[in-house]
Length: 161
Image 1 (cartoon, one colour):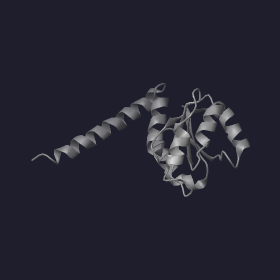
Image 2 (image 1 turned 45 degrees about the vertical axis):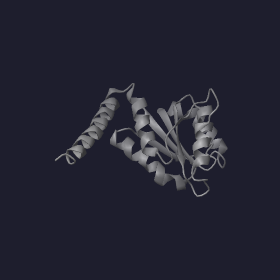
Image 3 (image 1 turned 120 degrees about the vertical axis):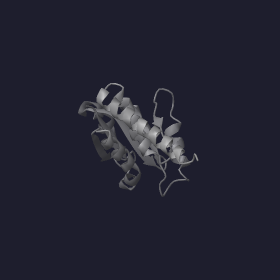
Image 4 (image 1 turned 135 degrees about the vertical axis):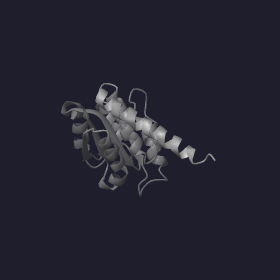
């Protein structure tokens, strides 16, 4: 089974990124979690981006705040799909700088981008990507989505008299 690499620019991003770790654990997907700063550890960033696929990683989730160069730089170096999580950080301009830094990638360097602080959705998307080639993960994603549907149906029953 392929792993999901979850990286972030600093430890202050962990409370947001924990949601991706938690949902992937529910799907039984192994994660590799690390701090990889685009600005403070560029050598580590280059090594991670170029070699993640050789360690069994199938998808990378990269969370970053502020100027948020991490997801795009990883995408420029890696052949793997990259999901960017814009993080509203203390040095952020209401998160818009992070969102636009991840969303506005040039042609040829795609980064799938989720909502501000949307690490849970990044984890679900990573599971869906892996599930396209792994029936065990796919079955867990289907069960999860059925659970969401059942929760809505049950909630609606309480509205009817």
